[in-house]
Length: 94
Ligand code: SF4
Ligand code: SF4
Image (cartoon, rainbow, N blue to C red; front, side, top):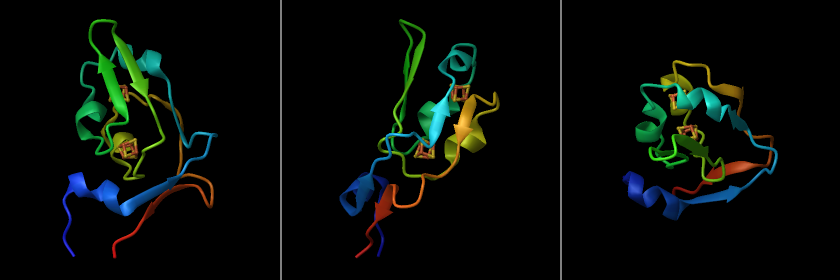
């Protein structure tokens, strides 16, 4: 079965952990000249507000792909782990 990225949320459910599995130090992002996370996150968890120079991160829709951890060169996370057991994303491919 082949699906594209836009369709993936049709096959996805979340059990959101209120204790976030990723904690972003948003002040680090203010100094970042790259912000690769904004373009790379498939779930659009990162939003950069250019007018106010402010990063917003929401972990609720995280697909746990790990891309943001890899592309961030500034160690902007005070926590990056996978969700606790029973929480996070569940993919249904049938
Ligand atoms: S790449 Fe890292 S430091 Fe830069 S905006 Fe994204 S999370 Fe923040
Ligand atoms: S792990 Fe993937 S989906 Fe989750 S915030 Fe990082 S880039 Fe986005």
